[in-house]
Amino acid sequence: MNTVAKPPHDRKLGLLEVSLTKQRLKPLWGTALDWVRDDIEKIIIHSNFLDGAPFSWVTIAIRYGLKDDEKPDYQSINKKFGDLPLSIEIDTNKLIDASINELKLIFERTVLVALIDAGQRFERPVIALKEKLDSL
Image 1 (tube, rainbow, N blue to C red):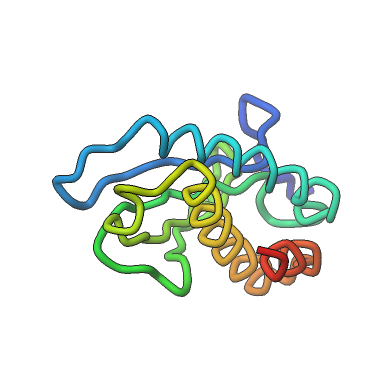
Image 2 (image 1 turned 180 degrees about the vertical axis):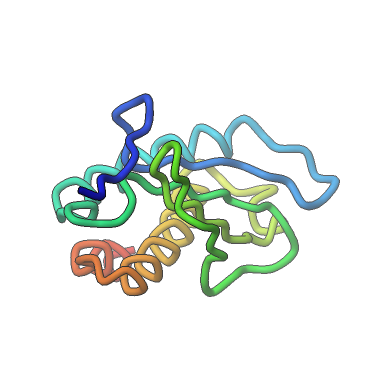
């Protein structure tokens, strides 16, 4: 029987920050990411996104760079912890003076774009994620 590895926690979505420029990460960015993670994780759970998937959770590295990616980059599913590692770049320039609400919108769009792409690639249900994206 082929089972998917589980993480040592109950999270279904993990968001990480990586700077590709000399711009220092701002605490407000991490706060906004935490809010986005909690909101979108609920959608992942209620939409059954992970049921029957070859991964037990998704991690997305938000790369603070100089462009906005339209699709995420993929790594192999982590055999030890069971996550699908994705990364996607955001243009740092639009984050620098953004309010907390503007940051949430930017991060929500970025995370949803990455999850919808992954969902389509792995034939997961993405209707709820698309509805959320359309409502932004």
